[in-house]
Amino acid sequence: MPKKEHAPPVKEIRFGRVMALIWANDTERGTMHNVTFQRLYHDGKEWQTTESFGRDDLPLLAKVADRAHTWIFENSRAEEKAEAA
Image 1 (spheres, rainbow, N blue to C red):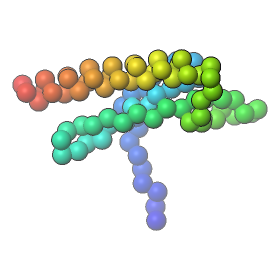
Image 2: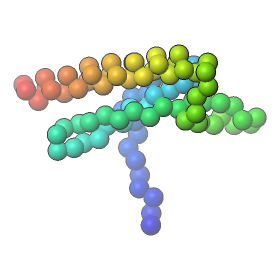
Image 3: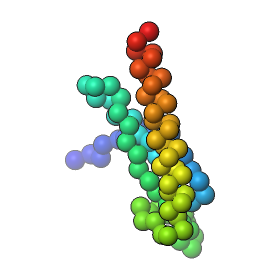
Image 4: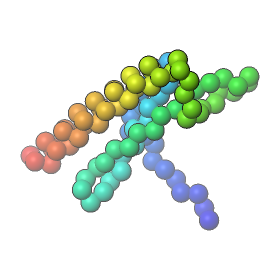
């Protein structure tokens, strides 16, 4: 079975090594957003990502989560206004 191609994230928010990727999903109720979180780390030769966060990563994770929430909230309101017009 061929691998399904995914659309790129609609927004990336990054603080240092921690990032949030915001994904748009079209549904019957309109566009819904989901967020995934990743941490970058260097594995000798290459950069890798993980979904595991250490104690010192948590403040950055909170910041990117807050920014992701704000972005989704603001963009959802913009879409609602555009549809009403």
